[in-house]
Image 1: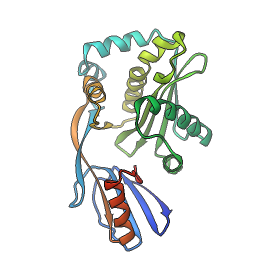
Image 2 (image 1 turned 30 degrees about the horizontal axis):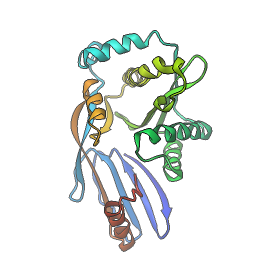
Image 3 (image 1 turned 90 degrees about the vertical axis):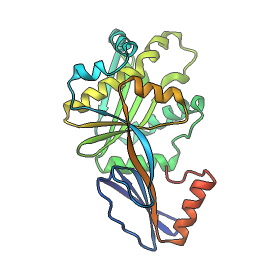
Length: 251
């Protein structure tokens, strides 16, 4: 399990990720947020997340994806790509990623990485559980990022973004087209070589195109669990605001 803690007004907020057992820890001054728990609990809700077994042979993993994806990976090898992997990214590298990601989400119309989410990522980095990966061309221009958190057996794809927001560079069109698939494949093989068993790509979204992308790459839906745990009145108010007002304090 991965756990980080911070103070928010009158309460301690604790984020737990990838738990493989559940031990209630209710106190009057804590709100515990459970993300991608591997085990259910009474107050948790179930989500389908996409996972792929990395213990299979490389040929089996390739065979599980669509013919078009195999073609695009072969085609991607002709592009001037360089993969950067950092197991302990610097603040500057995470700030650079944040700026890139927030340009990306403008066209995807989803939540950006605000100061809170960036600081949470840095706290996870300080625990040694973040893997920062970037795909750039030989000119050093970033085309795609993927950020992971990891435990002993699993890697969770925490953030993904591409340079799809760049519209005025026809010279980058082909490079951007293949970047996301290529970095995904390279990372899958990286984590396979490091001995990880499961690659978790995250849950089903409201955007069918994203779900289909994961399925076409061979990922299968499995159950994961999320939830809140608190005996604090203030904590219960925060949870109610999170769900009813769509404030998204904890994600």
